Length: 374
Image (cartoon, rainbow, N blue to C red; front, side):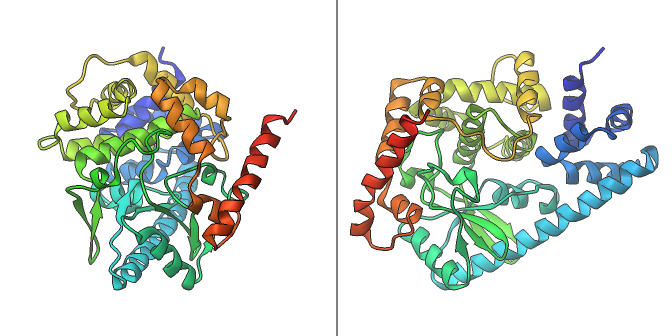
């Protein structure tokens, strides 16, 4: 008798690999009346993929009418949101190009147009853009002039303590994160930005051609992003789909030696090996890596089924326990104790750099209050 976790993994595998859903019909008929089932689909962002596969395989009549009515309503809502985000990113790209600013597309927005059959199959919470030089701050001023507003931790918990981007902006009801670097699992500074953006890939988005990270850096970034969230005890299955589709697309040209050098440089080889074994086990991805780890697949699904409102906040000591090497711990503490002046300016809504420096004392007072809070 298969466990429920194993059955959920089987459903996810069928959606990504586009194998017959007939074997999944009994599970869906049994589970669709439970809140857990719909939370699972929404949290892991696979509602559009499920509806699309059912339509592709002409299976609508095989499912209860109540299930299809609800699934279709959620699908239409997701498509409207995706179309809104697509319209906004195209407008933002046009605005920035007029000022000779060429951002890199990161994570979901890059993958939606690069590896999915239709961008609407890859739902997103926000849009991530990476800038070189002074592009980040110039882009921020341009979007502010067009009516965007900054979002802070009170509104969006995942903005706290991040060193690689300023607080997100909300532009036409779409959240956009303006990055000056990419996260490396709480290890700021490991990879120079010049190395991150070298030999960029090109993604076509309608009439626009946009920069994206080169394949090896793209996979590195996706895995560090996954690892950061797993440390916080939550993840999403769509991130496995991203990796599978991307690596399958680039399987004949992907430079594994280059990729493993990146992992070794930043001390993330063991973590990456674990997630790639998971990928091989769940989606049968063709990878030059050792045997599968079936036990971790169920553990990972448990994380993906843990529905939370936002990133589970981890205290400094909690994160120190999760980081493995001394170098990781030192760099994490450095980022916490000595955040950038731009971060302080944004946190306290200060425009003057010299005045912002004075606010470090206020920041450290906040740290002390948290330290002695009972």
